[in-house]
Length: 218
Image (cartoon, rainbow, N blue to C red; front, side, top):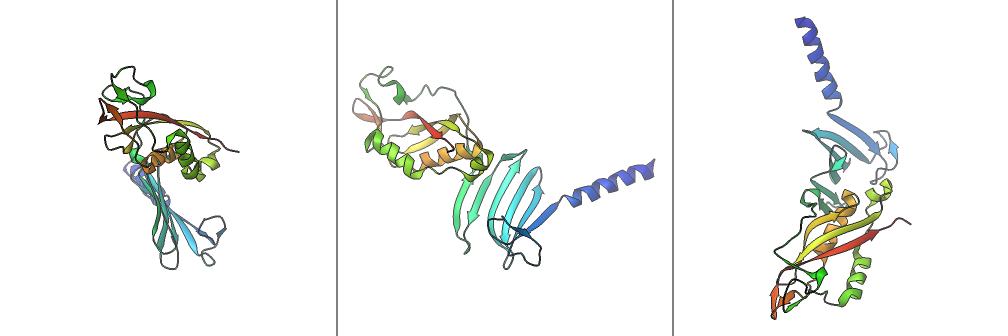
């Protein structure tokens, strides 16, 4: 019986070690053309950090990190990064900051309801009006490549706060599409220029806005 238990444990150890790290080799930095280790210029390394699957792509000549992603139960988690061929950061996405909520924010002025619940209040406004905001969105929204591969499309409803100084601060995703599209919407809000804050009796107050962003595959 003891020998059987030891055999099972040994089998588990061997099985774990086999899946501890997987390396595949590629000719190109986008990891499209898999090849042999001898001909490769780049490699993809997959390993587990606890329950989290970490995937890295590296240049073989100097082991330079090109990209890193993290997955937990097939969902993106943590910070995803991409670097150029000189090691400079191109992009960073922190999926840990995404908040999903439909709970009302009773303490703040709701710009979508005009002045129903606030006397002598004026709604916040984008500095160049709604047309300017739509131009900003059209110029900055990028369809995530991961969502294109998944065939994901739809409308994200994101709620954000406009503070007294006019800064747009993401608050929560009220209705999402997929984590990558939701993250794109979140980062777009972070990039927005300052708004004209809402006012009460002529004094700036904090308020919130709900903005739908449509992502459609064509």
